[in-house]
Image 1 (spheres, rainbow, N blue to C red):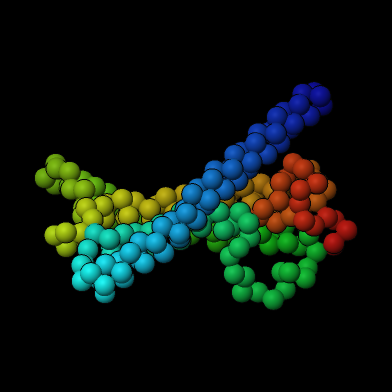
Image 2 (cartoon, one colour):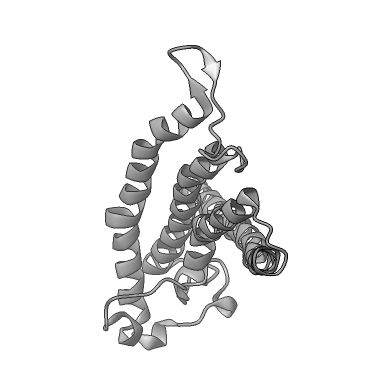
Length: 211
């Protein structure tokens, strides 16, 4: 019986670690892709300025693309930023406390604040996004576009980034929770925060000696 319980626990542990690594890889890939939008945004903005003030040419679609890229950078990069612990912390104690207390704060923060916020964001934005895609009253596709005639017809995609943001951030929160609980449960002997690897103490930034 004990061997069976140990085996099941090992499977559960490996599954959780595998899930955390998969989430980390996904958000890392999405974040790196979104980072290129910053370069594209600068280049497009430069082209808009040159076209407008040198050649006296205006382009509404190009101007709106700046808004799209700016929004996507923040929305799609939120999970990536959490992965690498890049969000601004407003507390003055976290950096100085031990690894165990950090893990407790991270676990409670995910359960009490991050996941509920992501769920609420999805809930409140769902009908807003659906209405941009499809009108259920008339039974017709809407595919909402710009209010400007020559603007980008992609508002429905930009609105879709809202729940995608919440999903990516929420998933990264799950990964963060797995790492924190693994450390608190004694499964791993080190805790590196959101970006640490729960299954490998060699890749994390803090150990139990920091308690």
